[in-house]
Length: 70
Image (tube, rainbow, N blue to C red):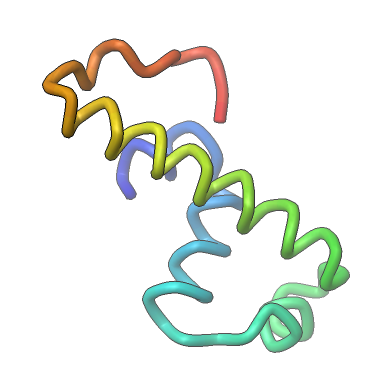
């Protein structure tokens, strides 16, 4: 999560609020002032990035994850 935060703070916040804190996407939208669509896009972007990181780590090659973006 620290690496995601460094790359995309918004995506990290959505993942934290939804996955770890249990907020619904609608609740996150109300809390942040974003639309549900904006929250969903950030959430999906963060989860995709985390899945790529976990996959690369599982394969024993965390440095093979592209550093260019989320």
